[in-house]
Amino acid sequence: MSWEVWDMISKTSFFNKGIYKSTLKRFAWGSVLYFAVLFLSTTLSILLSTDIHYLHVPHDYFQNNPLIFRNNYFVIPMLLAIATPTVVAALVFRFIHSKNQAIFSHSLPISRKANYISSVLASLTLMLVPILLNALSLMLVCLCGYGNYYTMADCVLWIFYNIYVIFIMFSCACFAVSLTGNGFAAIIINFIIHIFLFILAASFESMAESFIYGYAGMDTLFERIANNNFAYFAFSLSDTHFRERIELFKLIEFALASMVLYLTSYCLYKKRRLETAGDVAGFKCLNSIFKYFVTFLATALCFTVFSSYIGEKNVVFIVIVAIVSVVCYVALEMILKKTFNVFYSWKGYLVFASLFTVMIVFISQTSFMGFETRVPKSDEIKEATVYNYYHKSEEPFTSNEEVIDMAIKLHHEFTDGEIPKIKGRVNFTPDEALTNLHIKYKLKDGSTLDRKYTVTLNKSTLVMNDFYKIDEYKKKSEIIFTEDSKITNAFIDYENKIDNYEELIEEIRKDVLNLDYSELYPENYDGYETIYSIRLQYNTEPEHLSEGEAIVNYNHISINQRYVNAIKWLNENGYSKYKRVSTEVYVD
Image 1 (cartoon, rainbow, N blue to C red):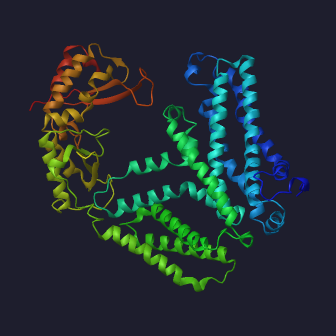
Image 2 (image 1 turned 90 degrees about the horizontal axis):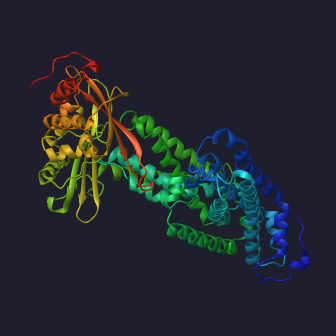
Image 3 (image 1 turned 45 degrees about the horizontal axis):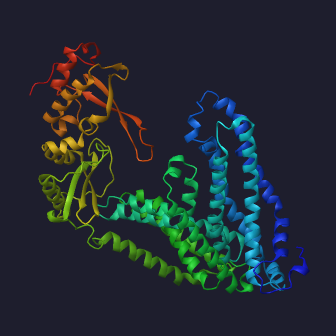
């Protein structure tokens, strides 16, 4: 390592040119490699593929979908922007992870403040220069006849996204290297920083689904974690629809959080002792935290992966989880204490195992703080719905008082034990087919209460029959009503277009209103043979699409003997040649 002594005369300066230049010289090879991969995955790839793949694509298409932001050209730059900062931080900050380098570096007349700031700036320079050079090559390509695929403004935006991701991801990497005592540990801790909340959420989800009666999932929890996760946000930038939904506040929020991490990293670096170089933890007090936290994550993750064994192979499940937790705990003890003689520390593992067991018992043997037994009162409910897991893609919420009262009554039957509790998972076995019933409320205070119960398919059909007696509920449940205004075409057997399909839809609606749930969705199809197979084409307009844009979807309706009005209309309008069977029309 070479140092320029004439640049190191001050212990109070914020920046040291010698540190900065030395870092650039030592790791310039990495910068060249970064540029080469970026160039191959973007500029060169565009030059080699545009004439082949996009020659016949209208140029107007690329005005809203610039080529350099398409997934096949933008995913790799985003992955590099996520992963590269971790490697750079582990290499550049090796002077605090290696005992020899730590002693030498900190014996020089340079303040830790200058050392840290200079190293951070040098690292960012090493990563930013390849981005700028590659952007320059993209601009040159744009000027040389590729302006129809993307513009100069798109190149500037490309630079911003790459630099922004580098900046926020490097702040996490700096935090990890400041906490740890060696480069390998820094990489592992940095990885854990980004995923530990997902592991905790997934573990709780598995435990809740296994032990909490009525638990229906927490999609909002994962959504909130994802929306506030650096790595997830950065990778999502490669998706066009995600970029369209980005709010300026979220960009500022992440940038400010990154600044806090840079400052925290500096404070940790300033306080750490040189003798911790080479250890897993940069501070002695972190040894126990690392040990128990990582053991807990490994045990929880194992619980999640093998949770399907619960209720079927409990002994196997317990043995697997116990082995994983013991191995992880012992391995961490060996790494942290740098010795194989760690088996005397069984008391520490016993404490961990006891606490983990207490947590499982609390979740499985209690109502989980009233979760299982809570049923809202009617005056608390704004809207309610009950629907079968397999037949609903949307939730038919309604403020109909009869539906709300029926939902509350059904909910009490589950919580009071009137309906047998089934802990098993949904299955399709002929002897006992199981399905899920959802009971969901929108409360007047703005919150949502959602419960999911496993029941036999026969019980589910009986419940749904009762709800389908209410026309308002049925209309909110069946797509022939909910999507009627969006239906644009109708076909028989996929390809035979139906003229005046609006009239057919009206006849199908009459039939649906006259049929029970069990007739619309029979368990046994004997006597319900399909006479006509109708495919409805309709348009949906998801939030992520621009105004006026839509996605074409299809829905199939099997017209059986019970669809008296629809069959009569099809026969009278000359579609009888498309019949599947020649069964007589059912008459009730």
